[in-house]
Image 1 (spheres, rainbow, N blue to C red):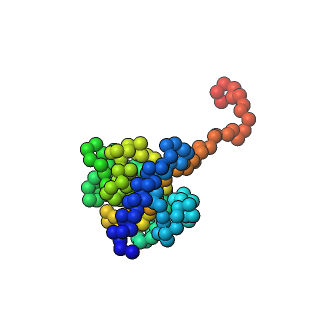
Image 2 (cartoon, helix red, strand yellow):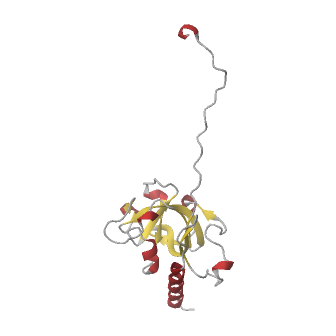
Image 3 (cartoon, rainbow, N blue to C red):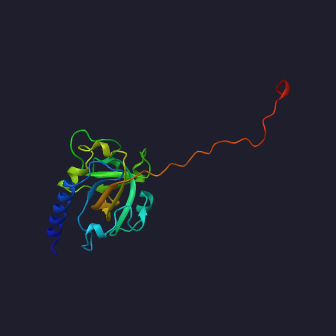
Length: 189
């Protein structure tokens, strides 16, 4: 099938999904396509969270481009220029961004630990850009899409699904315990 027909079909699918999105739930579907790459309906396919191997951002940076993958991480900002040196760890103030960057930590400020996700023009960009959707900043999401070279490193250039998911539990700080019974020290000795 010609590529432009697939893109038009995906755009129509995105519009349909956006019209029926739930208004509140534990997991919020931010964007979803009606069919996956094999043409099966989403009811028969896996969500980003349930898909095969889900990668961290650090793991995703090592993946060969050209694969459909699911990566989990925090939306931490966007790229304001043509390279990661233009990473903005915050919200845009003037124009809708054409991408967002993800990291394994919500407080990440090192561009070397981030990946970029392209927001294609139209409904996808309107639904996911940070200018119009500031509540997505620091949100933990699963993004399923095509890995490709984007901004001169591995990124996602075609989103198949995005889902807001529960953030992982942070490592618990151990509570100190006494190794011996407390004792009274006479005269401070």
